Image (cartoon, rainbow, N blue to C red; front, side, top):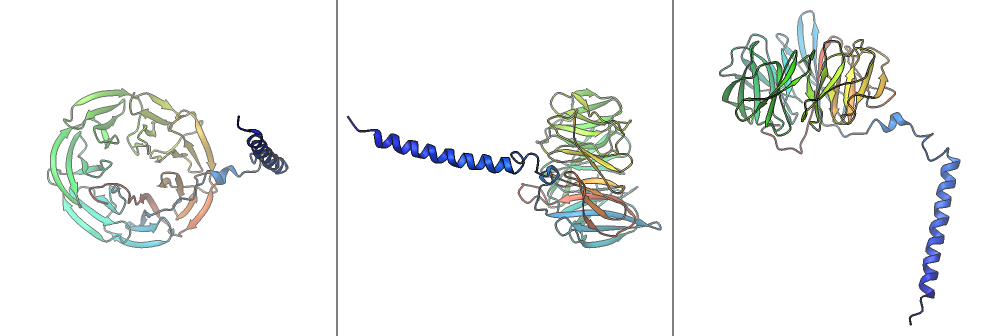
Amino acid sequence: MADTRSTRQARLVSLGALAIVAALILGSAWRGGGFGFSTVDVGALSSPQATLDGSLLLLREADGSFELVAVGLASREVLASVALDRRPSRIVPTPGGVSAFVLWPDSNRVTVYDTGTLEVQRDVALDGVSRPIELSFSPTGEQVFVVDGDGGGVVEYRHLRLELTENRRMELAGSGPVLTNRRATRLYRVSPQAVSVYFAQTGDLVETYPAAGMRPEGLRFDASYTALWGVDAAGNPFAVDERSGRVSLTDVAEAFRPGPAAGERVAFLSADGRSVVTVSPREPERVEATVELPQEALTVVAPDSSVFWAITADGAILDVSGAPARPIADLELPGIVEAVSSPVDRGGSFACF
């Protein structure tokens, strides 16, 4: 029979060494204030250091004149600026983030800008549309949905390398832009009383989610396409579950502005511009965190799926990914009336970046 004493002794030595190491670690943690829970800066943990690529597009107004400014998300410095002869009605980055489609009031033309240089890449007339008021992309950028006029007329275009080819016209009742799920198999329009869901292949109405009091401005999906997020007429943040249509109201005591920033979490700016609340798609009824701002913000944007910035009207940028808010740039650009984040995603398959 084999002698197992040496094997048992080796195991005992190993276990003894592990016990000594564990005791040293526990002792160190205890002397440091518990296991780090009482000494860790929770705010720092909530502000991930992301590598940002892309631009922040700022629309400025001064004495009736307008200017579009591109600011690098990584450098937080002005990259380019261009004078505009009027205020755009919509600024919509492509899914890949290196181009932006701009709509103009009372015109069927769309101007496409490079988001880094603001050079005009294309200026096209939208065939089949007389007065476009909304424009949106499918997640891959292969389809562009343009809302014509004030009704439910929607024209879908095929999009490839900034070329738009009219595909079909549909009647999709509602207001605001046409939103799609992750695979662009379902289309969503909002009315004051409901969210209408259409089958993308045929344009047929398949479901209606009752949701009274919703505002279509700034309605958007989170990064995982779990729910549609927005603010109702009373300023309450809400989420509409993409699968069930269940409406969840976030438990808040104050009113918030339309147009949340959506990523892995969703951030809402208070109506007075002095605080930001974040909500997790896993618990849409509960505020995850509240960040007080040292100055009034104009809007909140998501330069990355895990990062939120509050932008002021004079060009200050505050990182509000965690508490407290951290000033990270002061561009000294008074007169900002709109800010649009255009992060570049080079890992996807897009009809056009």
